[in-house]
Length: 210
Image (cartoon, rainbow, N blue to C red; front, side, top):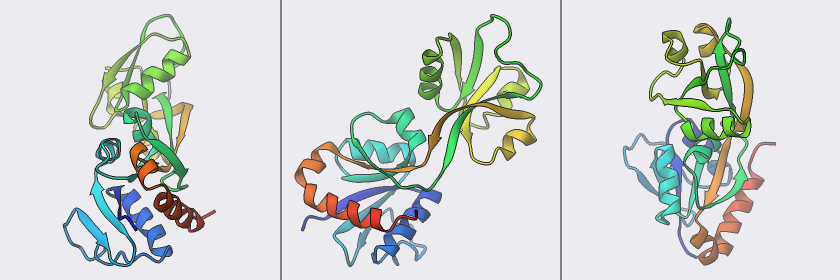
């Protein structure tokens, strides 16, 4: 049986994915040992785990150095291109939202709005569907600062509880897209290791929480 290689997004998604793998009966003890390794072999299943940043998970799967990956829908929408999105894992839930300062009326007036975001592709496509011409400002850090400093009229960002926005005088005015962790598969791997991949997918799906 071929050994599959799966890339996991480091952090919260990694921990939640490992919890499911353990429910499947996989021995993940080395990953939980505090080791700083980035590649791990599962001793009781033909699987290697690669730990990576979210955008790199997509890169590794697209280039075929990993057969599968677990990554958030947000990263897929911003960076994804050529792979199969096979399974909604149901954890890591949040949403993309458009948010403004509480006192602002975003749609009043005729000026071109400035939108600050870490996700320019998502924001651009959202406003294109609305037929709106906007200026997108790419922000790497705390996007909530942009309206407070007057550099943007609104932000497009991930919202989980909304607490950070509320504490900074912002509020979501429109939901853009729900987000959760997804399992993605390399296109060539699906042909080469179809039986192994579907066997893994079935086991994974059987152990997901309802």
